[in-house]
Image (tube, rainbow, N blue to C red; front, side):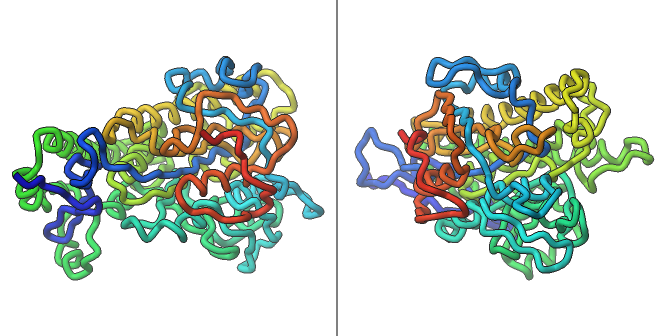
Length: 446
């Protein structure tokens, strides 16, 4: 009896919608060994948080595999064997180099580029190509979206946001070219439609009168899905059912979040059509990113938890002062304690994301195993505006290209872009140099 096989890039389609599928056993080449599974692609993502961190509470005391997680990184305990904590990395071009103040704008614009931004508040912005867009240029054609850019705060690409630096520098970490930032999507609904909407413009126009989420996107591809299910084995049918359940749950969460936002007090300014609860907002965007990777809709992503210099408050951890304001703590213990709570909150949300990835199976492995997710900031000590000894965590095994489970203390200042070169190797997007890189960071390699 011939074995039913399915192309890895199969979509379910219908009525102007298209839905990617997770990795199924049926996608295993028929010539593979009986014990073999389809080789999953490697994905990369870069998560940015603003204003640096309280480094004494971030950095583990010991180096190597037998280190203990620090106070701030304690929420990652469940994933200690899945991560590398890397200290000693720097973005030298975030420093002033004669341009005076503006460290927050520089910390975001250099975070993934390693290039020094041209100081201007006009249209003549210039910095460099970011690592995610280098990858997107080389491997982006293999997926529906070459890259995905997410965030939680609206940005501007014009005007002065930091001591004479254009708002484009503070609002973006992803740069397609030296003068073209990749605008991030902060609306969960629009991000979802970008992932699962149709490329058929005529069909989209016919459907503009209906609310996209009053009828599930899964309803639109139901006939195609039913035909597929008849041909799949028991294991694959279960995988597809579980995946569809997660998609539908996410749709409902988006609707609920928007409904909740509509009934809060009108004098509270909220991001448009985003959850009023910031933790739910952060996690919803993480869920979208997990879905994007699970369906192989993209293999490259960035996520800005907030813009550089963000002054957001964090009432969920009893911090009602602005984040940026607190970051200039002048060694006042009360402010330091509040910043530590903010740092730990962000790490806790990252741990939620890692748990999501680790619970998604891809053959004998997990989605987290096939990812490399860098979490960090372009500032170390926010009070001193230090661009060295950055707080960086690298999660995942990158398809067995990365050896996790260690604290790598590089001691001597090392360009962050050296890490990027090694990550690019892992996704098959090799380049000789990026920004101020001086070589590959071989210490993270498996």
